Structure formats: structure tokens, C-alpha cells
Image (tube, rainbow, N blue to C red; front, side):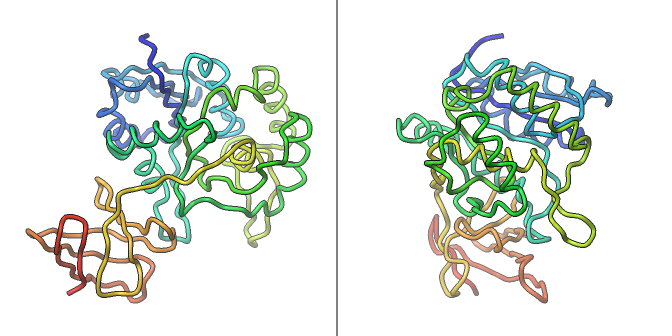
Length: 303
């Protein structure tokens, strides 16, 4: 397998999203190596066929620790060969009950060759250890704080950058920074902690009454941001005139729309006609189609 400077660590648990990720990663086929983790108890031959034309290794893992433990397994196996990486997985849940944060996260990381190259330049900055979407930089530890403190202490991770993490656990990072704290022995120990805490299969952090369930999986999600300098991704946006909010939006290749600064503003382009856009904002009630007209390449105005 040809080695490049950038690795994609993709945990593809949901096989029905294989085409989705192939469509996003195919334009980067000459720029990245893909190291995919797949569930060992599911038939993934169709996924292997779909990714056959990309530079991909397939690593079958057990269903412990979800995407975060699977990421650490391939990071410690392949990470030393790469200067930087992008961590992704098949997130299907909705944020705020309407925001498709998988699309938001993937678009901000690898939405186009230009976006990808701009992010790589950011990661080459000596002060940056990881990057993620500005609207998904979060601070709440919820009920996971004691597990975060325990793991950071055990791994000798300083608390100097205990600030933000990327909600949804998809981000770009500098390999050497993460390998400073994670090795195969650490990963094996984490796996045992997760097994002992019943973090197998779907790992929820809320019970049916909305109470928080403390897990090592969700503690790691936060530690991935806390262990170094996490910087927000800068994006080329479209300015919206004639309304108070949103002011700056991004339209993805799949025609989903979000506010670059606020994940609670999300919608879909349902139709395009010449210089007109028709958008349904999912955060609004009642939902209705709103019409916008392009006044320039990066400016639209509500009609």
C-alpha cells in the first residue's frame, strides 16, 4: 500500500453508508490512505467491493468501544506512518433532533479538495494539534467528568488545554500528538475498562428518562479535544441578506444547509432554478419552503 502523508481513519459500522463515504473520499484518492475498521460480526464484502478502487485497508474489530476504540486501534497500528489524520465514522443520530451532524462534520473535514487542503495547512501549523467545525466545539463534560479525570491522570495528559472538544467525535489531528499518549498497551487497557463497563454495541449516554450514563467512550470523545490545541475550521461561506439569522451558511454537496457558527440552524435545498434557491429550514416551525435569490457568487437574498 502506497504511503501518503494523510490517513483517513474511518469506522464504518453502518454498511448502508459505504456509498456515502466513498462519494466524499473518492476525490481525495491520490491524497490520502484510508484505514477502515469494520464490525467482525457483519458481512462487509459489499463495502470492500465499493472501496476497492481507493487506497484502503480493511481492519475487522469487535463491537467494543464503538468508533473511539476502533479509531485508537488503527491509530496505534498505522498512525506513525502519517503526519496527520482525519477520524470519521457512520454517525446516524440527529443533533437537536433535526441537524444531520454527520453531513456537517464530514463536509467541514473533507467536503472538497479545497476544503481538505486548507485543513491540512491548518494542521501543519506547529501550534495546532486538532481541528473541528466551529459550531460543534463543545464544553460540557456532563456525567463523564470523573472518567475524564481518571483517564487523563492515568495517561499523563496535562490539563492545560481542558477546554473544548468536537461534538460528534469527527476531527482532524496531528498523529504524533495522539501517539504521545496512546499506544497498543493503553488501547488494550481501555478495551478492558469498556468491557467491564458494558460498553458493547450501541453506547448511549442517556437513559430513557434523559438521565446521563457515564461511559469511557464519551470520556474519550472529550479527551481527544482536551489533549492538545484544538482549533476551529475556517470555511468559505455564503452570506444571507435580508434576514437576521442565519447570516453565514454552508451548502454541502448533498444540498444540506447549515450555519457555520450555529449547529441549531440547519436545512435542505429542495430545489434550484437558475439563480434561485428554495430552502426548508428544519429548525423553524412551521416548516415551509423559503425562496432566495443569488445576487453574487457568495451572497443570497431572501425573496
